[in-house]
Picture 1 (cartoon, rainbow, N blue to C red):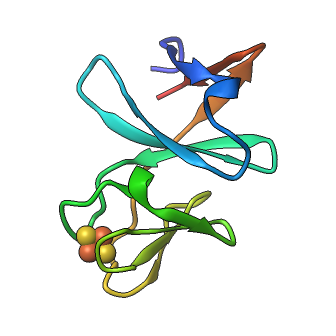
Picture 2 (cartoon, rainbow, N blue to C red; picture 1 turned 90 degrees about the horizontal axis):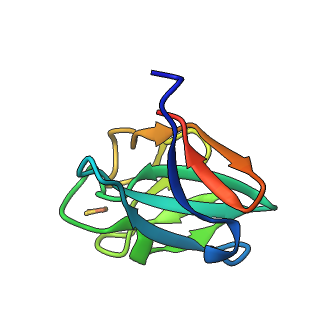
Length: 104
Ligand code: FES
């Protein structure tokens, strides 16, 4: 629920324009992105195969999967390039001081 927030990382843990992987205690593994000073999160696991998106490259607001170079829009999760066709789940984040919080 919205009243449960989890601290994911510190704002400084992710350099501008980069992505890092963070594990949540409940078992989820997320890719967390910093774009133009804002933070975004998606599932780390690609919807096409067994690839970790946090090992991919960011280009024009999209994350390029390191396996087959499919891509997703980081802000919306929409699949943008084949072979990805299924959207990646996105998560709501908030910044509180130096902390990046996961809201759902
Ligand atoms: Fe990501 Fe194939 S595993 S594009």
